[in-house]
Structures are given as C-alpha cells and as structure tokens.
Length: 318
Figure (cartoon, rainbow, N blue to C red):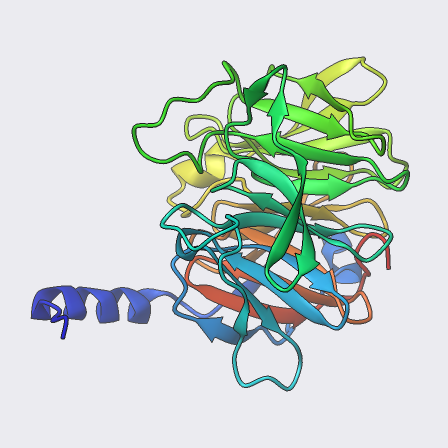
C-alpha cells in the first residue's frame, strides 16, 4: 500500500480548498450576448493528471488525460466520466504520453494528436488506430499537440515538443504548424512560431488562429492562409503578470467568429478583432474546451477537473 506523507496530503487538500468557485468576468457589454453572467458552471469530473483536448463525438464528450495515456467519455446523465480509450496515444500500453487534442471529421471519424506515437491518428474502434501523418521531410514529428478540421476535409495541426519523453531529442529543428491534405500530403504552414499549441479556423476558413504557449509571451496569433503572414491578435502576458495561473493553450471559434481561448485565469473570450470581452475564470491552469450537444453546451478541461456550462451562442459547425 502506497502511503502519502501527511504534509503532502495537507498541502493537496489545502490547494484544492483555495481554488475559488468559477465565475464570469465581464469586461465589455458585448459579452452579454455570448454568455449569461450568472451561468451555472458544473464540475462533472475530477482527479485527472492533466485533462485536455475535448471534442463532441457522436453522443458524448471525449477528452484526454495526457500523462495517463487515457481518453475518457462523458454524457449527460453519467455520474462521472468513464474510460473510453486506454492507451490513447500509443498502439500498445505504454508509459509514454497519450492523446492530446481531439477532433471529428465530416465522416464522424475521431482524430487524435497522439503524443506517444508522435503522429496524427484516426480511431478505428476496438482500440485500433490508423496513422494519418507521422513525419515531415523524412523526420518524425515532435509530438502533434492540437488539430482542427477544415470544411474541405484538410487537417491543420501544431507540433511543439511537449510530448517528447525526457531526454529524447526532437528530429524536427523547429515547432511546426502543418496541413494534412485529403490526399495524405503533409505541407508546412509555418515554422516561425515557437511553442504553437491550440489551433482553430475562422468561419470563412481564411485565417488559422494559433494559441502560443510561450512562457515569456503567451498570445494568440493569426496566420493568413493566403500566405500574407502572421500577426498578433491578443497578448496575454499582462494577465499572467497579474498573477493569473496558466497560459494560452486550446481554443475554439463560435458561430459569430469570436475566439474562446484558454489563457491566464481560465477561458478568455475575444472578439474576432482580438478585443477581450470577458473571461470564464477557473482560477487554475485551463487547457482546452469544446462545444457539444445542441451546440451551446461548453465542456472545459481545467487542470485536474472538467466542467460544463451553457452559452448563448453556438460553437462553430453546429
């Protein structure tokens, strides 16, 4: 039986007790059309090592616990999330990291960024995966992190080295953002961003948004897909300097083009122009989010916890 030192147990309990209840922070009247100020924020699961990458798949939310190489499922009525895939990031049971970002394509296939296998894969059922992209220019990816599916079926994904085992050297000499075309060809979108993480597409499919997890300069960037370049959309460092935990990680776009990105303090809600309209404050590092059900239920992975809440706007694609 494994014992826990009393002071560690006390510290763990004390930390949990110190996290305030989630709440809405309104910075602009435009937020009122997106989320109610008194919205109920319900915790539906807890105890994960690092919850990540949620997606609405068929009739339930699926999310990753990256260090545990496990994906969980939750739907309304469940007492708690249940194991959906184990392992989720490798073909066989392994101590390597599991899946991170998840997505669903137009054919209802579940797609995974698989840290341990260092690839983008497709779930085939019965614990089996089909590799979709594992290398570029003859070299293995670092560890694909997050992905988004375009309306034409192509897949864009980020490739920082977060999932590499300690001591293992990356083969790629940069942190790339890639496009996987429907014919299976992988092309480099940009290598000019250090620590690209979350990824999303504008509703007109012309702009790729990137959440950049640079500890010194967390931010949201826009990459024009016509090749005209990169630009900053929102700089999150002032929030981090104010003592809010976490950085820029996962992101999604709503039906009106607003950006919902995790950032210091929780989920930041930005206008398409990058104006900070308000936040859903979870008071702890927050990883990712996804809409599901009728398009207005938002599922948020926040450190060791997962939450649901209702929004007044639908997510992209619903």
